[in-house]
Image (cartoon, rainbow, N blue to C red; front, top):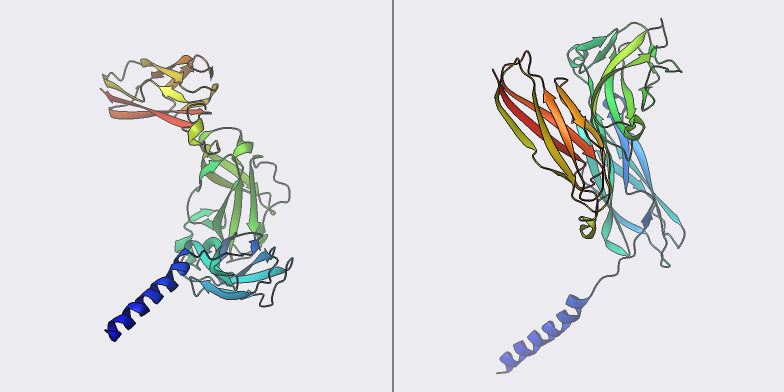
Length: 364
């Protein structure tokens, strides 16, 4: 009986002691970081390690010191402030990334724990690792003069109007003399900027074209395939670069409660089958489009993926409940077999800013 009573008493005490712990919430007192993510851009392996620095402010009344730093990769090392930080003092973390043969985009996590925050803050160091090519001739097969490129064109991908997009393009100087860019570039469009890193590319040296594309300054939407001309600093030569891009308008996320209020583009039919048609006859159809929202709808642009499709739109601005007709004419001349054409509609509908109508046919 005494043993049973002892075990019961011990169990009750353990249970009672565990109850307060289960209900406890550990108060986190964290550092205030200037940035939680730093993008160091493209990193050429031959340049060696690259450093970035994070800063944090202690806005708490209690003193804080960093206890532990954890990284998710041996290629990332950290030097940090080890002094105790009183209110108002700033901590510094110097993060060094050592590039290797693993090419591509990377995101390295750094967990910072302090005496007042056992969970830790997570910081991120991001960029693009570009290893040294084993064979420059094979790595840069496309030549423009003495400059070698990996591809025949630069694909900027999707570009949104809320912020410019930066693309890093490897370039190799196969020539016998240095190459740089002219200070004044009067043939590059105003929505693009191009620079060379380093500014003078030595013979048999790899560098980067840093291309910045401003979607808002482009002032147009859709797919673009264009050639820009960059002036070189010798012999009045120009470097022609083919650039492809898709520009989309950016809209802030819409709260669920406002989804029925915002402009909303309704399309009567987004898949049209013309069935069997003759290559010698044009075909026309009409599509009804309606503003299903409560706020005014503006159709920014209607584009097609072929010059063989002509578009007519009655009106671009629709009030709530108002409709308009979109007419298209397809000229199948010179075509045979199964055919697909796309009509893209850009509007200020923030939920679906780009809608696509597919036109199918079998051309005889």
